[in-house]
Amino acid sequence: MKGQGRVSLSIGWITLFLMGTDLFVVSPLLPFISQAYKISSAMAGWMVTVFAITYAFSAPFFGWLSDKKGRRSLITLGLLLFAASNILTACAPSFLWLIVSRILAGFSVASITPLIYAIIGDIAPPSRRGTWLSIVVSGHLTALWAGTPLGTLLEHFLGWRSVFIVMATIGVILMFVNFKAWKSVPSNELTTNLLKGNLARILGSVSVTAIWAISMYTLYIYLGAALHFNNGFSSAEIALAVTFYGIGAVLGSLSSGQLTDKFGERKISINTLIVLILILLCLGVFFSSGDWLYFFMFIWALVGYAGFTSYQARLAVEYPLERGIVMAWNNTALYIGITLGSILGGYVISNWGYSTLPYACSIAAVLSFIISTQKRQVLKGKSTIINR
Image (cartoon, rainbow, N blue to C red; front, side, top):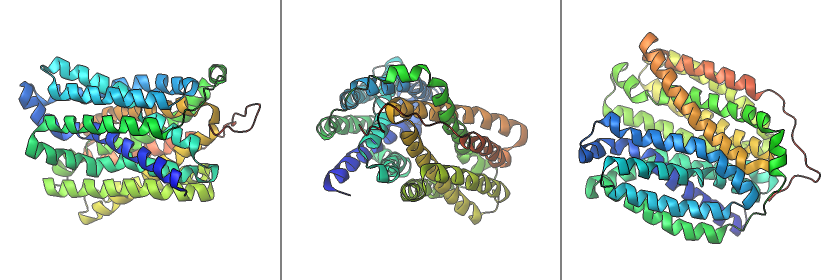
């Protein structure tokens, strides 16, 4: 990997680490935020809800716009909005303004995260695209087990508002860094015409990610409650289980890059889904088996996120002319899947209990596998694939 490639990947990694921290750190801060505004924890949870909804609906627009107008300017403006929204979160005089700030944050992250994936896909050497994408994806996943604890530690010493001030400050720095790092991507005037007959195929492709997200988050969202009420885990044991999961997710993302480059995007993305189905079944069998659970939590995340990363590389190859909007739709599909997983998990718990959650996840993984194996015609332009 050449020096410029290392710089680009480092900037992409750090940027996505910040975006992931902004998403994941809110949950452990909710008790302190609810106390500050004298509201219930459930009401404070709307901070996460409005962020996710805003992101899901705005990401495709930013992806489409970046394909036409270039990615660098949108990423730069997105980081400026990110800094402003986090300052507003820290200084919000009322809960209403707090909600407004998280809506703005959702817009900002939607104009950054999928475009970082797309721009890395643009500049990566074709033979190394899987590896490059796996590296930047690991930045987002590292926030799950590293960024969030750092945020909660900062809250302990300086209060919850300081977390958002620090993220805003880093956002301003990254705004200048990203503007200098990314060369302007030429606009692609073919995008609009291509989408007219291609949107259904894109939606079919990203539905794999939506169902994959159901297979991962139907259990993960309720993991703490499941381990506590079903297994009698203490808070320390729950934290250890989440740590195993987080490390597995990062290692899975990183390892999938080299495997993808060596064996191909389609083969790795499909085979990881097969293994994911088997792991989820094993997780169901051993869910109440003490230390074995830690092992299967690690393997579950390792295989699951290896598949996610390889599938993103597959989409980057299959949609070279609409890479920005496809990555954006893929991120929207991810958030839709998380939402549906939350609803499905609640239904499963109410009717059959926590121990059945892994089996529900395995069914979703089977559906994702079936859709993923459908052969799609790769779109070809008048010229060869454009590495913008």
